[in-house]
Image (cartoon, rainbow, N blue to C red):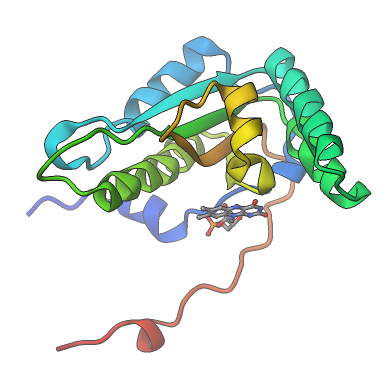
Length: 190
Ligand SMILES: Cc1cc2nc3c(=O)[nH]c(=O)nc-3n(C[C@H](O)[C@H](O)[C@H](O)COP(=O)(O)O)c2cc1C
């Protein structure tokens, strides 16, 4: 057995960094590509690769914010939902949209492909964090509204957004940690 202390310590202490506290710069393409490559080493039954990524920098983010606001107004939303339609894009310097893109497969039910898309989101948060950036996985109505995800991210029928992972520079102060699960409550030893 080979123990990798640094990797274990990272996993034992990892935490998301709140996107609201992130600043620029965000990783450029050269810095982001190895993060994406690491994140894409994700469990995936049958190697179907049932996901794809859309990377948005400031220009795309501002377009997505406008589309979010327009869609919220089209739905007659209240000001809070209108703000949520733009907020996460307005504040962000870089977002990687993880799109679940299920593949017809006799032996791999869609739920397993869905789980792989979720694992990709976490892998991406972890890879960006390990590379020294702040990262957080967000959703909100903009991730679930069919019209918005079609217009903004080009989702086709059957595709959906698993997560919008924001990546940026961490602020000077560590973000407060959240309470972590109590093993005795969630683990059953048989
Ligand atoms: C599917 C999914 C969607 C999420 N959407 C949001 C969101 O829209 N807004 C938010 O503040 N946190 C959201 N979170 C929570 C954060 O990603 C994260 O769990 C939280 O910041 C604590 O992260 P940590 O346990 O990695 O430190 C979401 C988490 C998951 C798994």
